[in-house]
Length: 102
Image (tube, rainbow, N blue to C red; front, side, top):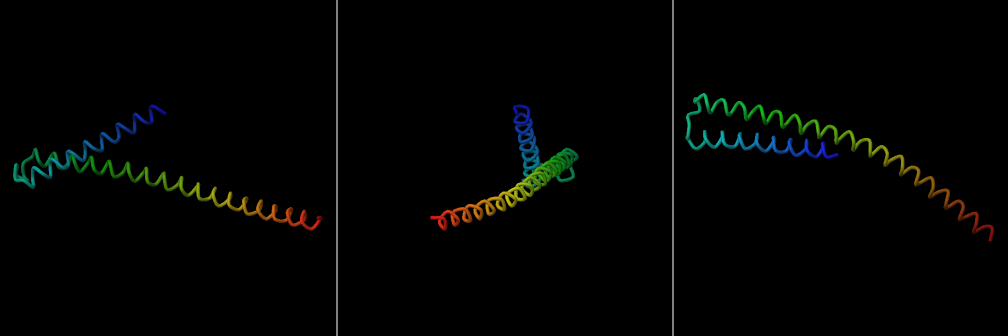
């Protein structure tokens, strides 16, 4: 469990660093600190894009995994709901039989 949390923290830090790098690159270009044709800025923008694409893929995988889990839970919930309805009906039938016997 600790390894999972550690991985999660590392992943979040990686996403934050990627987002921060992208923000810095955009700010540099937007503020006119460096020319958009400067190889350093272009390299930073490409690395930021790569980090954001990687982050997007990670988030999409997590989203898809969570969606599958939710679907499985909804199926389980529907099955349990059916069982509850059956038990409720059986209880009503037993109570009705008890009332009629009195």
